Image (cartoon, rainbow, N blue to C red; front, side, top):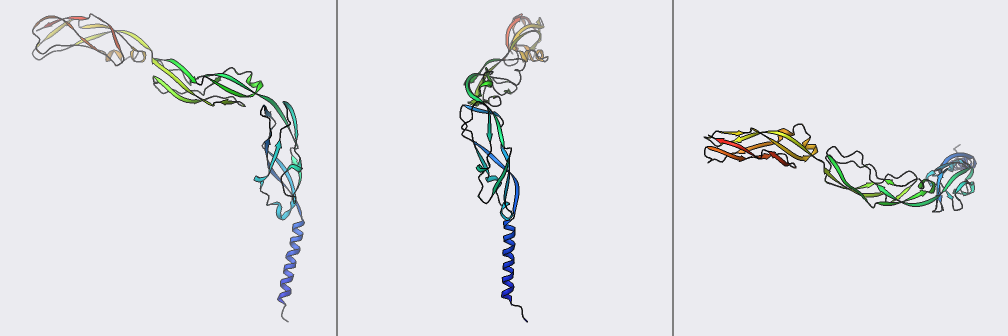
Amino acid sequence: MKPNWQYLLLALAMALFCWYLVTGREKVDTWMPMRVEMTGLPEDLYIKSGMVATVDVLVRGPRGVARKIDESQIVYSLHLGRIAAGKNIVLFETKNVPLPKVYEVVEIRPTRLELEVERRAVKTVPVKVVLRASPPDGFAMSAARATPDAVRLSGPAGKLDKITEIRTQPVTLPQPPPARFDDRVPLDVPEDLEATPPAVQVVMGFTAKESEITLRAPLAIKKPKGREAEVSPQAVTLRIKGPAAIVADKDFPGLVEATLELKPDIEPGKYEASYRVKMPQGCELIEAKPDKVSLTVK
């Protein structure tokens, strides 16, 4: 006797339908995170503590569809239009969870928030330019200013009352520092405060400190061919002013030269001659003793 394939197919379909009815009606509980979105906060108030970014929600629904909930789409809109300065208790209500009716929200953890709220204030304070390190030896800062030189701070009133100035982030100077430093520098804004603008234009000027030195320099003679020459004295005393970083270097005396250059056609005899002093750039000869030397040409 041949099996009736129509009856077999019908039996299979009925079995699948019964399985769907059984599994579809079965309820399961699932914990999932839910993002909290704050709305309606008055502009003159600030939440000091107690706010959370997410809460946990216990959702009950059919087994077949409970796994299809997109957690990223579940957002609890927490309206804060009625809060006031001080301590506020805000409740989470299951009816406000945005899920289709096929789901049942069983529980929310935590069930409430305790928000500490302060009144927001606005204050204008001066800007102070801060260096990461002092100018290097031999340099002095001639000017330092910020534009704008004052900014507006907003935040908790209790915190603003204690602030008298706002500092820049520490400025790192190039080495050696330039004659003019000009750059945009962000402000070092305390936590919970906002600055307008958040950065300022900082301009600083630097000059090299000057120093004086007195030294003895041998007098070198550049003689033409066929001539001999003698000078008296053979060394001169020089007083030189220049950048402190250069003048204070231990090798500086070796960079100073006193030279007497004779003309090619100079005749034998005795003369009073002037000499030239060569020194590093930026230095200045203040005094030379003697200013002329005795020269004997043979």
